[in-house]
Length: 384
View (cartoon, helix red, strand yellow):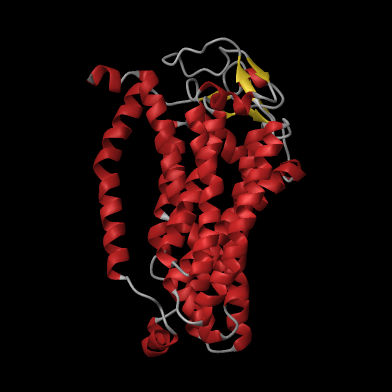
């Protein structure tokens, strides 16, 4: 039994699943932080209301970003070829994301240090940028991944990226970015409806209902684009050994517009995943209308799970296809670290991930309850 659990092919699949879990964890937790920032101008009209919105995420945003760090670390250690290509090929896009994400904590810390209207307005703009830009760019990255990225390897496995920033910002990728932005904004609205009080929560619920429907429609239309082959598709020719060497030059891959639907045709039960990506936002929209705030947040989170998992299920075993040399695309079975590295990392994950989850749960329990204008006013400079 242990030999099966720890053979090379199985370890690669386990780490593919864990990578998905970490990315979903980041989107569900830090996602509502970004969503609150993106929605700040429309859910909060006065300075007091904006402070209420900001203080719903102010105490937890740092802990939520742990998932982002874990995801980046997992890619670096478990999928080094993927890390090398994505962080070099998407370098300028990643720079935009990091710049925006740096603005957010600075805005949290400095916004309330002075009472001037212009001072606070400028930091509010920084919070909007820090929320909306990463949500959009992450979706653009997914869109480019689905279409294929222009790269190849030399004979000594040195990756060469051939694209540009403006090439990444193509219409189909921007459409995926719009799906991502709508999804994150919906989740931010769900958090505000659940955590804030008064006018902020009411506006968030009204906006969130529209965002829930919009997210479901945009995601469903993305499925139509996939069905028509407009969002790429790549398939391995023949079979690929699950326990083969981590060498992307040892297989054949073809561009196949129908490839992203192949896993669903082979395993119809997997259709539950994209259906969850549609049903979750729609249920959230109903919850917003009925003001079932806790259930709305859960439905929104399930929608995120379905949307992100759909990408992984559709592409498996592909991780990063090459549009210029499909045969050198990265797959789950030829882009991982060594077996010993994956085993060691799995042991560390089994030990430390429950600790992270337990601590996070404890923090949210301590901070349970709605944030009101009275809370913010009575806290004085201690509030954001």
